[in-house]
Image 1 (spheres, chains in turn orange, red):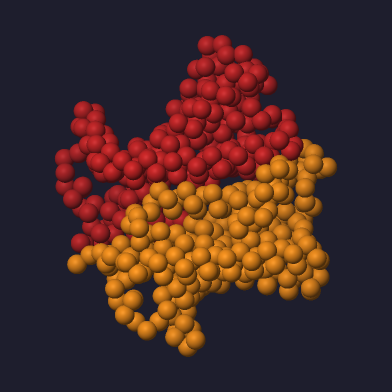
Image 2 (tube, each protein chain N blue to C red; image 1 turned 135 degrees about the vertical axis):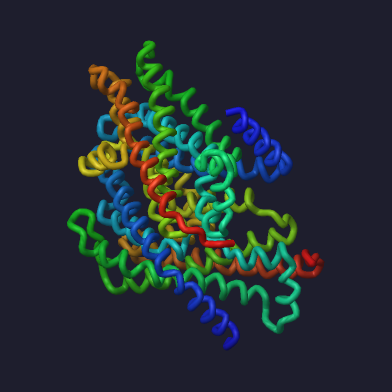
Length: 267
Length: 258
């Protein structure tokens, strides 16, 4: 456990170094969040009855999405991990007495958490002080907040477990530019990254809600605003646990297979 | 110009060497915009109309902006690499060559995987042009062409600013993405959707609305005056400060060494 914690700490401190980049990124996300909210507001004015969630819930959804972008977006890619496979560094990793899957998992979660830690607080503060109706609301009650935190952790786990599957595919393909974009785009869309899942038309929505992608940002962001509450939230969290375990097992199994006949690249 | 065509052919050939990777990346690019399109479609299947614009009319916006952007990006990709050119000192080499600097930056890199997006915009145009309810007279067709052509020049100007910033900061500025990538993403709806303030900003500061919202009103016969037809041309004035800013940056450029 201690060695995982060390990996985690190194990565965390490392990622905290890029403060100017974080500042520029935050400004971008503000503008982005506002534009998204303006667009949804226009649709809300067009027909409030057709709006599938409360407007304030949508606003919270978008602000939380911007604040926790680095935590849940499939786009972020661990270049170190990918490089270790395509350039042969994996050989060193394999002789170390550390389980590789666990190490990758720690590395990825530390990077994501550090980036988020840098960015989320200022975004949240501003989101709380902008005027109504663009202001972010607090969760309806303490219980919901607790469920949100739990669900956010599970979502992070699912996102990382899924992205590790993509790294494993590198053992076979070596080049991922195409595959990576395709997987990232589809999963972000199905996780509610473009528009929240409640805005999907009915039959598609029903399917999307049970896919592993629904266990990513979709779940915590909707639990936060109270769009999913009570027993539904519990059911959602159970779904998240199910997908997390399934993806972890699949990842470990595939990784063991890949490592059995790994070809070390480079020289 | 002949030299540019040579570079064009060279980049095209070199990218065609890795066909699988090339087509997968192009497919990925296609999907990026396709999910945006799906999002628009889902929203409209629920709401039908937003700010007096129907789905097909919004699609015209979507296609104009996306086509303008992908053309600008395909040829202006060199600006993306510009920060790196500056920070590794490669830019010094460009300065001593007897050619225009901007030309050399452009020729350094072209990205044809963007054609995935281009195909999509053509498909969207094929659907939206007959269904949008516009009566396509000669002046309407001319307006549409102006929208796309001037649009890509304006995006080009934004790329130029992005590059010019790196004279001062050595690194690319993520914030510029709000105007480039953001312009592409949010241009999917007519800019009036985002409210008055945003529309004013996009008219007088970063003139994205000049080639999207105003000429669209002309296409839909909501404004009769020919002024709305030529707004894209007015937007081209924006290129002057872009170019000026680049020149200022160039003048105070200090090499970072190699």
